Image 1: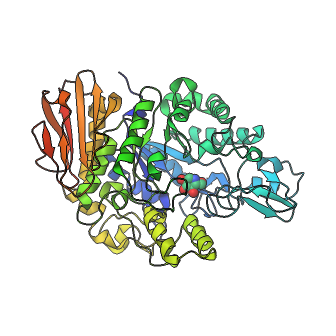
Image 2: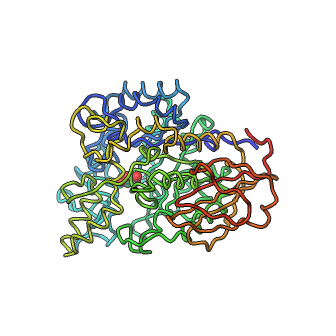
Image 3: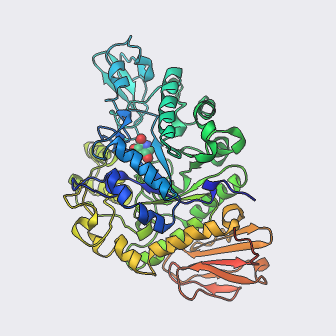
Length: 551
Ligand code: NOJ
């Protein structure tokens, strides 16, 4: 079976502002990324996903673009960017960029033009409605408040699903789509290897009908984008859509190869399992492992041979996984390795978010002065105004705030964790003396070295890429176990999600098979193929009936 290159690859996400600062101004930059490319080579990753580096007033840290053709001066120059692409390619690393086309910045020239008068040719690049008695509808922004902003000059409201400095583009306008295609070609011509498409499930929205995600024309637009832009580059690039709203049936529409839309999508269902259903991310609820097993299993089964998904625990919008569903104190190393094992043995393309590979943890927010993220800031003020208890608001933010992911990367135990020689734009997590890349690289038992092994396993074992998936013991409340099968070969992954010492019964049909241990976070994982007792956060991967299927 042949796999497309991105099916056996591992992606590493860089959030440039927090990755590595080369010039001491406290902000990460592109030359800083170049300095660390050899680190990524050592880790073994294949693809870099670079969060936005385009010119931006930084209302949402670069997800509000004012010029798609320019590099934010904080990050460097276009020459730096070209050098990054070349240096990455020299090392056999592919590089994909963020494509943010649901909205621009309100400082983008298109929006500046559009807001000068109702008859401006750019007016229809955005979504404007009049509203004599207040906002045209009660649609809300993801970043709190109404999704409509009043513009006094032209006496109309424009639509923004995110901040009011991020007006939504009107993708139903063919001229907008053509401008976007032109811009995408510009970057592909520079040699990048594809795009991570920001909230791409929203580009077919029809606000008057209240349809926001998965609009009726969305797939038509993605197919058009393929035909007009992506097709000639097909084998050299990959695309991944951020699609918070999709279910597995919709995901097939986005990713089935014969539909020519996207290569894979980011699914979100597992990320909402620790929130009260329907009440949004800030309404906290403990994770029930059985829900996680059910959701991940549903996706594994539905997309097998019918699509492709990405695998992730972290990104720049999520709290750190070891703090969220692991243990960031006593069992930090064990639990980080366990979580990585569960994820990296699944079908899909794994994504590692900067710092995950060394087990970086959530930070502590002392008060709202510490917040940098617009989502946290807006939510905090809105709820304070509503009279909510500040302690409750802080508890939500402490659990879910996006700033946890954005503290500077911890490179070493020196000044500001080696991130900058100056004053960092955001406080470094004080645990950098213990948790940092240099220490992790020195220690053969570190999370870092474990990630290296997981990345290599995917390259070496066809079964990890293509094996079918079966959940074992759905009702076990502490253990996540599953089997992957390819021909006569099988993998059994067993992981204890907690600090207890639960028993796990091997499935009958696997008990007689020859067994190797592929990887484990304990030195002496349990043998005996019947009833095993697991230690805190223990994870083991058994290879059964090994055949010489290494690829
Ligand atoms: C999703 C991005 O991941 C997030 O960081 C951003 O705030 C929104 N899209 C808006 O672009």
